[in-house]
Image: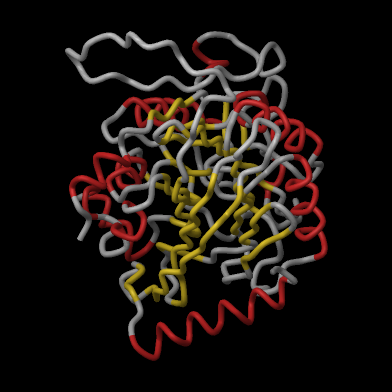
Amino acid sequence: MIAAGRRSVRRSGTVLVLLACSVLAGCSRSEAPPPPPQSRAPTGSAPETSTAPTPRERRPSPVRLAVAGDIHFEGVLAPRLRDPATALAPASPALAEADLAIVNLETSVGSGGRPEAGKRFTFSAGASAFTALAAAGIDVASMANNHAVDFGRDRLASTLRAARRAAAADPPLAVVGIGADEDEAFTPAVTDVDGTRVAVLAASAADQDPTADPTAGWNAGPDTSGVAGALDPRRLLREVRRADRTADVVVVHLHWGVQGERCPSADQRLLARRLVGAGADVVAGSHAHELQGDGRLGPGYVAYGLGNFAWYSPGPTGVLTLTVRPPRAPAGRAEVTASRWWPATIGADGLAAPDSGAAAAASRDQRVALRECAGLG
């Protein structure tokens, strides 16, 4: 059970959803860095009288980040959207107790469009999918994946409208990695958690065969909607550097790797090193539909693959919670000081239920083996 006090602290962070920027205001990511987050004062509160601290005087607090794997609402999960408030129970507590929870929403969302011709699996959900994620304690959802445009660009306008409504709802949900153009797709969600600024970016580096997966070509462009593509990672690396200049903690969520593989590919390892070198403090991923290793990589922390989380295929899953200490000096780096694994198994109902006893011990042992396979500390 989650204490009410912890829930209120968690929701006190202000999520600045910059995703709608280029649609509503015509701004460009190349014009200026994103504005710093602003905290909302309670209604009727007295105005602040003290002078705002300089960057050197700020004392950002450690934050707890929860990351989990792929979520869709297909098959047995589809009826659960009739009641979004309970759609992802009993996994909600493991997500909601963190200061910031991040997942991959691997489905198209909205209305209109048609299933992509020739694609074996096409996933679809209504806008209530966003409501379900927020109700489960999720703060940021990546849609930078190979199923976000399963119903073509004709649906994307409704997806972006639903994302803007989700950002303004209570509780809010920020949707990243998708946009009306490339600038918007790469715009991070910035959250203030008790004075600590956390920027979350998302991109897809999944190498798909266009003959088998038409949505491999649905990357956003300068004037076209789509997802943030990072097979060529130069734009992603540039945005990570930008975010690092204004945020205390930078998180990158990637759709990458080889489906069915438990060990990260050489491409994953190379990109992880480049992202950490560019300023990413936490790199988390999905796409393999298998758990992959997590651990330290230089000054950063990488979780190569979080597998499935709410899925129509039973199997092992979990929630990784990281405690991140912000930089102690203006030029310093954030540091993951602790990690905790919530072991779980996806059942026949498509939901993650916590493991216990021998099953929990086996899940933790597997995590150790996967870390070694990934070459992480």
